[in-house]
View (cartoon, rainbow, N blue to C red):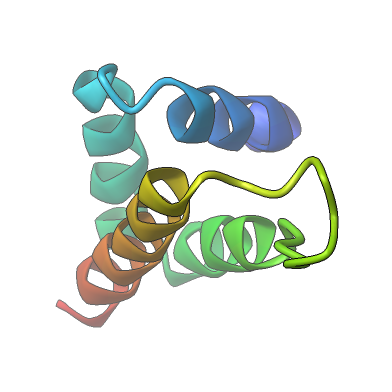
Length: 77
C-alpha cells in the first residue's frame, strides 16, 4: 500500500466525498506510526502558495488540515 501512497493521498484530497478512503488511511495510521508519518508528511508537502494560480481552494486546504489531524490523532492513540 505504501507504494501507492502519493496517489491515494491525491485521490482523497481531490475527492473529499470518498470518505471511505480517508477512513482506510486513518485506520492504517492507527496501526502504524510509520504509516501515519508517511501520510502526514505526504499531505504536508502539498504546496499552497497564495501567489500560485493553481493553489488549493480554501475548503480543500481545510480538508487537508483535517486529514493531517486525523492521521496525527490515529497515530497517538
